[in-house]
Length: 332
Ligand code: GTP
Ligand code: IMP
Ligand code: MG
Image (cartoon, rainbow, N blue to C red; front, side, top):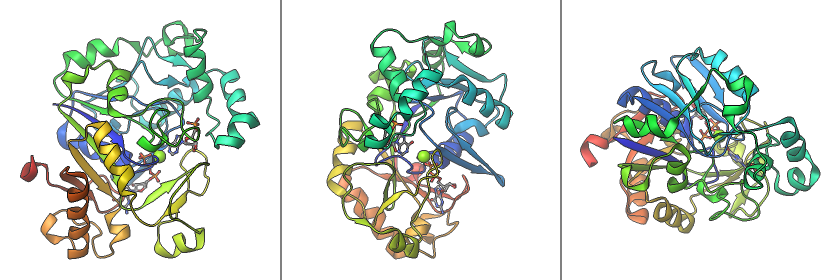
């Protein structure tokens, strides 16, 4: 089975938690990362440990899976080294030889006012690195001495493997093609691009899981419907802070249905995962059985299914990877 995970909103939908659950429950041979680069921030929590990851995919928690970063991802060798050390994954982490390397100059350019103040970028050098690649003056991973021990051929590996979990990053509304341009990230982050990032063709994908959060958040500038003030978000328990930048996230109470329908269509979503259901609907913390969710929570799930015409197969009910209702056996 080859499955792609993508974010359906503005990033931070809780991809980290869903990916780490799937890595353990499905035990894929390879967990591969597509998407942009270390601008992403994923929080992975399992067995009482908590990791903030930017470069590695989140499915690191199954020691049987090889971990790969696809050619489309821009790589910061320093961030990669730190995360490999932190997670104890040395020896099973690989980077495609064609990945673009982020340099100190890219980070400086990203922090310059023109980009960081206008767009509210993460200053991680991702946008300028992607621009260098397009300008054809980027350094590739195969030519970077700091990446020597990591370099491999990711397309060959993922096409050989039967079970692959591919993680995108950011969210559809931040896509440079389909999002709220110019307040977007530097690449398209929809499922087709994520597949290309790791070297998988569109016909080789079995499932696309679009992850959404039960309310909407956005970090950085740009249009955002039905935004509520920080105080109100705090009261509702919705207020969040960025993993990479520590910035307070902007909050909108509900789901943006038209955007989500468009996202499900362009991503070709075959499943939806909804996270933080326990936050939006108290009384559901730690529930793992669909029948045990409150009726309010179940009605919300049914509304998502009606609006998007996609089954909601995974439902997050707490911060740990295991706090989840998995309906895949019943619904697929
Ligand atoms: P992605 O960028 O999509 O990976 O999301 P994220 O990891 O950036 O989100 P963030 O850094 O805000 O972390 C989310 C936090 O919420 C983590 O501590 C998760 O363990 C936690 N979380 C994820 N899903 C759920 C859920 O369903 N319920 C609760 N209560 N917490 C969750
Ligand atoms: P950049 O990707 O660093 O160039 O930032 C461009 C925009 O995308 C900014 O508004 C960022 O806040 C936003 N962004 C980039 N990556 C993420 C992410 O992983 N989660 C949420 N927002 C992101
Ligand atoms: Mg995040």
